[in-house]
Length: 444
Image (cartoon, rainbow, N blue to C red):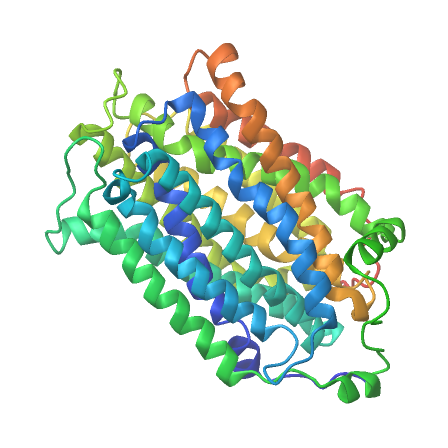
């Protein structure tokens, strides 16, 4: 007996939580560098602070995948992890921009970096089971649609999260400037609202989505995960038996996420210096805050484009195939990032972000759709967790070497980090051509 096809509403309900996760993730990506610089971090040190995010993800996601494969509770297999991650992520969102309030106990920079680690760890706790849930619930022919719906919701949440600080300041008159070492109120309020949306959207998925019981899983011809062996034994065996397709996707993911990490970390200082002409790295200046707010806007644009493009991805993939769709999308993203070097006005950067949006949508959907058809259903969680290593390792690599590259090779000119990210997208597109998609069906 095969898995039943789900209705459109059911597919959307099971992924609504991604709306809140990505809203929080967008607030982190668009504002963490600005917050850390406000607390005293130098531009070439930023990647060192950001290393805590992928490092915690690398450790946590395989563990969460292993235990979610083996967990059966009244809430189900994946849903307990959604809820636990959401609660902790909310605390991180509330405390990170308010780190200056804790200076009597610890330096605000330490508190801010610690909250960045807590946020990213908890986002990972929630995110990995959402990926596995698509593999759990959907038959093969609906998986591309399932991951595309997640991408749409990710895009919507990210647009709101990216634009919120700007609109709170411009439309509602919330203060956008603050004393040296203090985060502006428009950013603080944005993080608080993000926490509210995150917990609400996770609860929506928990209450509207039913997971298949162990007996139902058996009727689909899929044995539930074996309960023998601990995490490390399961990890070693899974790594040894890793499907060929998954190994090939590893190179695609490495260069994709090396490029993304560079974009997230260095866009704010790159735009502040290359577009707004900031020379003395004065993080309390109006120009720096204006640049930070505009980065939120352009990040919202690429996320908005990704949400719209995700509606088209299933149809494009059916026609061209998932590999070609991903290759074209990555090339467009690379062109978008490199074009930022040649533009000299803030509005022109909106054009760059269109290409980035195409790549982002595909990165969030196509590799997972290809992967899900190549791994055993009973180990969906652990393999999705291991697959996250191909996301976190390149980010850690960039975190270690990105700062020295900017400092010694590029003379602290962060704009060149964005050019390098674009080149990485081109390499990822070339690597995609070598991937075997074992269950792809292309419409002729």
